[in-house]
Length: 400
Image (cartoon, rainbow, N blue to C red; front, side, top):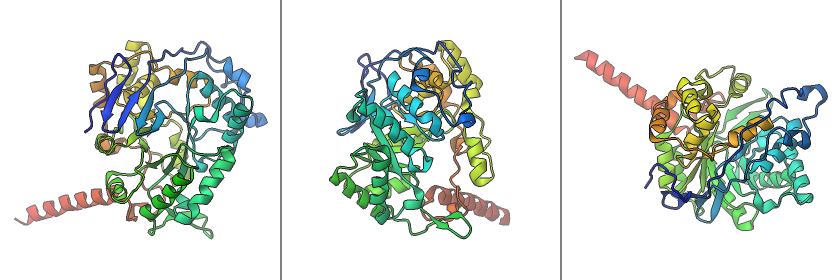
């Protein structure tokens, strides 16, 4: 049974059967210096800032021990997203994120910065600054490798590029597999994608020790239900687009009811998305960004916090893991500064009222031409059927 998370005096909160968060409240420090990276042009000399330069951007923040527990798996509630993290910035950004207390790094082979992340981690491990078991590393099966035979090679590539022996969490990145048309240089949906066969192969890698737990990303309720019916190892986490404009209340409630924790990607509304969407589909999804919402800004002023702090705290108080991304050390620090305040009930209700439902979704489901016709796009098909039913009823009413 799902219930909205409420922080207690001990910092322990029960979300649902098998999923809960625990830890101590930690006080963050706001940035005292801003814009250290604004003065650095990464395209000018191909180099990002040094870790020493990054460390001077803001004072240290105490380590956060808040985690979501699913069985024996502990997932830090505040992670660091690496999508669009430009390679020259990786080393300093990763080190700074760890230095301020972040212990969860979300990666994907499709982000094309895996090797740089591995190099950064290797240096930190070798010098003894951090140990592998202190850091929660997640990875994802890319949509172009959605075949059981591809999975061992993909996982091995993760381990080699990240220079580690295991991944803490491995997810299916997207429910729709794709096939590359090498002549056209484009991807098209693969209608033979088999979630069950893929999951069985991933379960085998857990038994071999190179993966500690399994998860899903961008899956809907019907897809999760189908997989749960045959899974021996249950998913511990569902990663999906979540922010105040796209709160996915039914999906979150369902996942937690199944003992699956939830991670929000794009928790701030993904300011870097417009250019990305235009590059891959020629369209920009003009939903608007929550960071500039007047209600969010007003609540931020009330607590003397940034809009980003409010948006992240809103999700954290619901027991949802967040993985915001930034390459700027002052912003990484500022984003993490969310453990020294709590939104009251009225503020939570106001933020909940900002939900736009499906119209607040920024990442389109129809990424590749024909995705909406794929058998695994159940939500899209269901919506088409609802619309068709409404049209049928309308036509019937006109005949009387």
